[in-house]
Image (tube, rainbow, N blue to C red; front, side, top):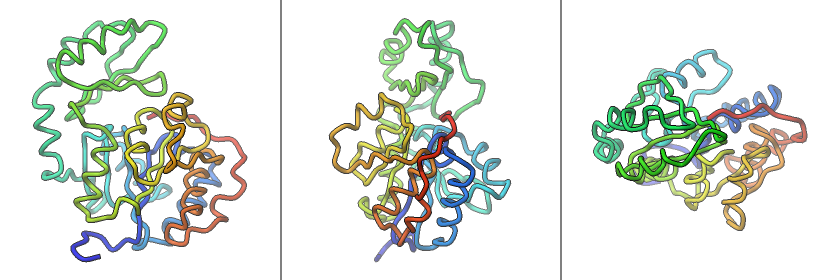
Length: 266
C-alpha cells in the first residue's frame, strides 16, 4: 500500500507466554514453520510483558522465529528488530517516556512493603513490576498507584504492573500499526491473560487462545471481533490465522489442537 513501511499483506501481533510459546512442541513447530514460509507476506509482532533482552535470548536459539517488531514491557517499549537486536523506536516512545518520567524510584519507594507484592529485580525503563500474591493482597497498592497518577494491572493472579497512565499493550500496538501504515483490520492480536485485554478488546481482529485466563474470557464475552479458540497456545493462534485466511494460512497448522498445553507466565 502507498506509504507503507512494510510489504506485508497482514500481521500477527502475539503475546508470548501461554500464547505463541504455549501448547505442545509439535504445535509450536507447525505454527513457526508456517509463519517462516510466509515471511514477507505475514508480519510478526511480539506484544508481551517480556523485555527486549529476553526476546533476544529467546529467538537466538533458532527455534522461535524472530519478529520484525516488538511491543514489549506490557506496552511500554515499542521497538524494531535490527540485526537480531531489539531497538526502541524513539518517535513512538516519546509519549510513553513523557508520561512516565522518572517515576520508577518513587513507585518503588511508595510500594515498598506493600501487602501481596514482591518487587521484580529487572530494571524496566518505563514501568515497575511485581510478583503478586492474591491471598496476602489488601488493595492498598492500587490506591497508592492511582494516587501517583499511574495505571496498575493485575494479570493471571501472578503479576502486578505499574504503568504510565494510558499505556498498555493495546494502545501501543495501535500506535505501531498506524506508524507502519498497516490497516488495523489486517492485524490479528492473540493473547491469553488480562494483560492482553487492551489489545484484544481494542477492535482489531483478535483471538483468545484455548486455556486463557477465565477473567479475560469474561471481559471479552460478547465482542464479535474476538475468536475464542479451542486450540491451546500456538494451536489456537494457528486456528485463528487459518479462520481469517491471513496469508493463506493452512488449516493443517491448526489441526489436532485438542492436546494439552503449557502454563503461561507473562
